[in-house]
Length: 124
Image (cartoon, rainbow, N blue to C red; front, side, top):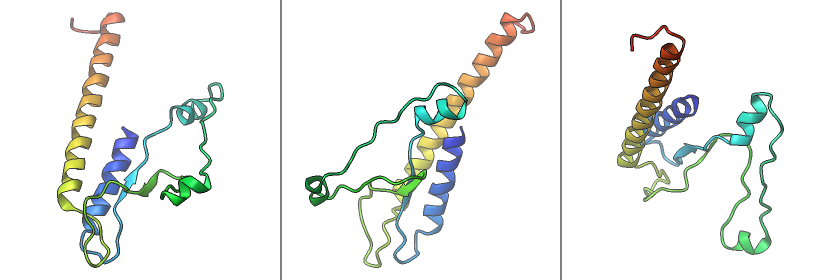
């Protein structure tokens, strides 16, 4: 849910800067399972790294840097002023975020109901 909240914030920033000359749309990278395990104090899980070769750079590949917010590479158009925010794409992302948040909330609620039932505190 924290990832979805951060993603919603970034999409809102994209929409707010939809008319800012030169603004590039941003996106939030998906959370790393290894990072979650490390944060929880579990065993260390190494995340695979990819080294960009000169041939890959010649094809346009870039080395990924740290941080969760990155430039959105899946844009369909760029305006003459350099801004590549498309309102329709951002609204579609907001709909997807809302659907994911609803699904997670429902899963959490069902899990809590199961725990209450298992401990004898539920109504069912």
